[in-house]
Length: 126
Image 1 (tube, rainbow, N blue to C red):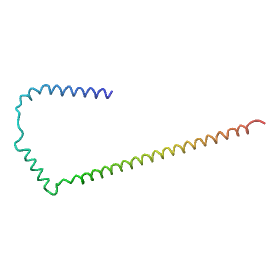
Image 2 (image 1 turned 45 degrees about the horizontal axis):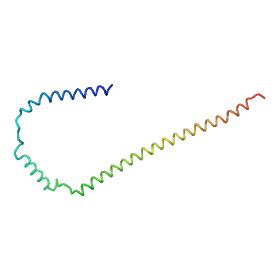
Image 3 (image 1 turned 120 degrees about the vertical axis):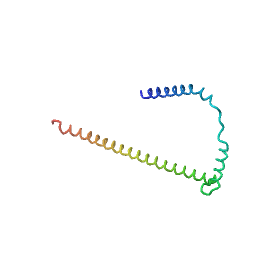
């Protein structure tokens, strides 16, 4: 039911966006074409060059960047490995406890079964 409502809302929103876009196309077509601010990209290039020249914002070499990325990936994989190892240990402990519990009940059942024939023999009239 919730997926049906979400789907209806999605399609309703898409239809609404389509209607708005269809109404605004003529207005957008009448707008004059403007050129970007002259020299804007040249200013950005100059700022980027100044940043590259300064020591504080100097980009590291490709090898150093690659080393950092690889070391972070290694740390992430080690964390994942540790987490999965913990999960596996917990699962093994749970299965071990279940086995011990099952063994207990089986032993109890056997001991009860062994006692029953003795009780029958003792209680039988002679």
